[in-house]
Length: 101
Image 1 (cartoon, rainbow, N blue to C red):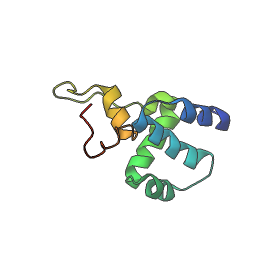
Image 2 (image 1 turned 90 degrees about the vertical axis):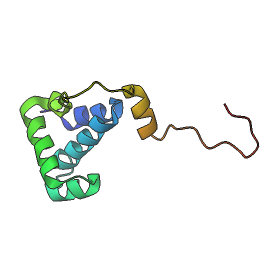
Image 3 (image 1 turned 90 degrees about the horizontal axis):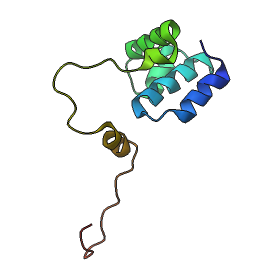
Image 4 (image 1 turned 180 degrees about the vertical axis):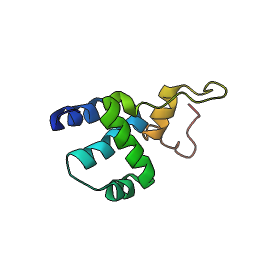
């Protein structure tokens, strides 16, 4: 297990939005002492999901929070683009009458 400071550093430096959410839930449980129920409510996840993340963190550290490979076709959209859009990095709408980019 990581120290409180190591967990906070991991949260600040993580680039993957999904893993950042998992680390935030772990911080809430480990550092703030929140219950699974409270962390699940705050993260808008199911309580069982939060419990699974915590179990994987306790067993494997931060590597336990990595997503498992998924079956099926490979991703059609690059991870960087997905994270950019999920992070609110999409361009603002054009002004009326302005030329397209």
